[in-house]
Amino acid sequence: MKTERRSVIKRLFASMVGLLGANAVLRAESKSATKETFNITKQDNVPLFSGSTKYNGLVFVAGKGAHFDGDIKAHTDHVLKELEAELKKAGSSMEKVLKVNVYLADLGDYKAMNEVYQGRFGSKPPVRTTVATYGGVPGDSLVEMDCIAYV
Image 1 (cartoon, rainbow, N blue to C red):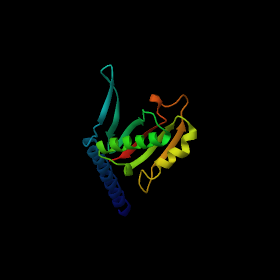
Image 2: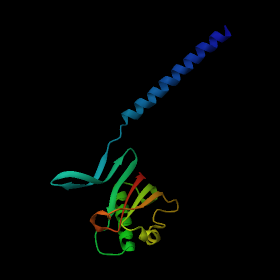
Image 3: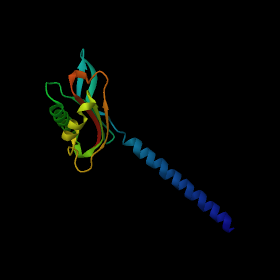
Image 4: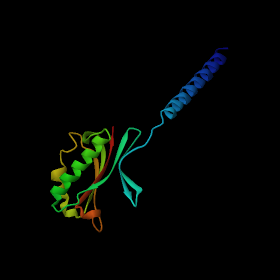
């Protein structure tokens, strides 16, 4: 009798947990995230890419470059300001950046780029990948960066 009662209680508990789990899935689906895009660039009047996309609490910022004459420090400063502006438009900030990709036209600029980059993301900087590109960065920029942040 005792083991039979335990078996019934276990089955009842398991079914309740299953219902709670299913309910959580249904609630998550009912709050379906919508994709928001900002600063859409067009080519031949057809959307090509967005400056940033916000989805499910994350912000994905497209690569930003510096398309003017200047050295790596000026380009890095400009690119970081562009990232910051894009993040603000999407409701985020530099302190909420989780991941940055840095693309350098010349790996020899790594140290100077770091001098400008350092401290721009607050006291808890994001993870980062830095690579030198073969053939340069589009638009003759010395550096390009993209990032992922949360809202």
